[in-house]
Every structure is written in C-alpha cells, then in structure tokens.
Amino acid sequence: MNVNYKKCLKIVTLVITAVLIGSVSAATYSYMYIQGGGSITSGGLSWATGEDAPAGATVVGAYVTNMNFSIPVDSDMNFTDSLHLINADTSPHTFGIESTVTAGNASKFSAFDMVIYQSGGARVAKISIKSGESATGLTIQGSETLYIRFEIKPLLGETSGYLAFTVKLTYEVA
Image 1 (tube, rainbow, N blue to C red):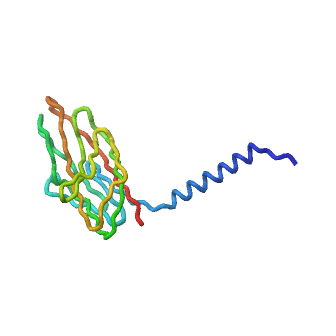
Image 2 (cartoon, rainbow, N blue to C red):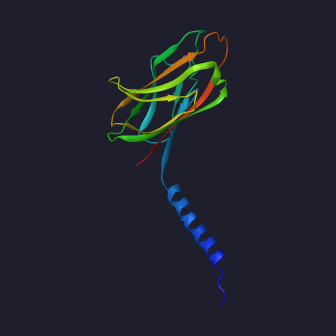
C-alpha cells in the first residue's frame, strides 16, 4: 500500500486548523460601539451620556447614537464629560477599544481624540480617532465609572469639514 504523505500532511493541518478555529470561536465576547455614537451588547458594562454630550446624543440599550460634535472654526474644543462607561458588576473587566474613521476627511483636524479617565482624574487611555488607533488591556474596576472626553482640534483656517467614526469596545464576558 502506497501512503501519500503530502495528502496526509494537508489533512492533519486542516484538522488542527479546524480545532483552533473552533476553540477561539467558543469564547463569548461582548462589543460596544460609538458611531459618531457607539454600542454595548450584553454584560456588566453600559454607557450613559455625560453633561457635555452633544444635544440629541442618546443611549438606547447597547448603542450610543447622535454623538455629533459641533466645533467652531479655529477653535479647539474639549468635551470633558461626554460619556460614562459604567461597570455594574462588582468584578473588574479588561477591555480593548478600536476606532475607525467611517467617513469625512481626517486631514481637516490636527487632533480628534477620545480620552478615557477615572473619576479621580487619572488618565486610562488616549485614542486618536483621526489615526484609527486602538488600545488593549484596559481595565475598569468593579462598580467603577470611567469618563470619556473628546478633544477635537480643527486645522487653522479650515471653514468646513467633518469626520464620522466608529469606536468599538470589546470585553470578554466571564
């Protein structure tokens, strides 16, 4: 009997790959988004609008929508208390954030950043939405609230322009 080693190697590789994909797919994840707004699925984390949230910004279940900031020409704006990320659990969660520009022209802004900080003022992370940055390994303690600030700086002399974005927050549900 003649054994075709190349075919056997391909089959073994295929089986190993299938097992790896299956084990990774078995993990349960929860997602949160900000689309010029944002989202959360099930789990202990939730969004709440802050005092500096744009007019019309709403939280409906897992999503924050209508986070549409208005920035005057040649003015740097800091929306200090736009959103809150609330951990209703008593246990901490580790999460990651990924930002994506979905429309508009990022070159019209010198900065378009999302800053996450604790209630005491300590900065947890600063993510450049303009550059599509991500951050991983961030932690929110049990029963803690994190505050989201948007720092937006249009280029001097720009009289028009916009930037639409999506922010996805991912954490593993235990």
